[in-house]
Image 1: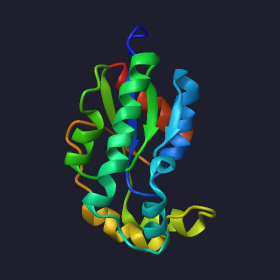
Image 2: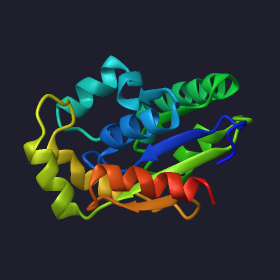
Image 3: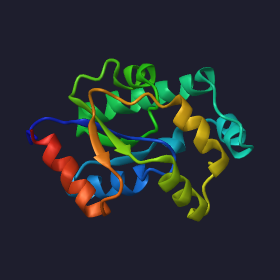
Amino acid sequence: MNEHINPVIFVMGVSGSGKSTIGKLLSLKLSLPYFEGDEYHSPENIAKMSAAQPLTDIDRQVWLESLNQLAINQGKNKGCIIGCSALKEKYRKTLAKGVSQPVYFVFLEGNFEIISQRLQNRKGHFMPPALLQSQFEALQIPENAIKINILDPPEQIVNNIIQNLSH
């Protein structure tokens, strides 16, 4: 990866795939700020998800647009890493729209059983495991993304991402 370019990297995948863990580690390795996409959801979206109700495309639109503005503004500064599910191709287009810096999507791939087990063990997050099926149903596997298997240890995953970014 060219040191003079300020990339915007979206670490994406379904809930429980490791976006926060990997995004934060990648942030440390690349000296780029990390932003947790979930923190940009409206209180209404959080309440809906907490009640095990899947978000609609309409629910997600304002959230995606706010993450897009974050990407545009941070890209102009130093670049950034944003953890965001980015489940559908149209969401990824909204996220990348108007970003003048290189945009990369890193897709954390894992199967339903592994991720479901992770969610069962996770504490203190508003996303209930019951919504995982709806995320897998909404997921459109990205074609133009760095695809990473979540079974590797986090350090190895980050090294794999960095290796892919430099190509």
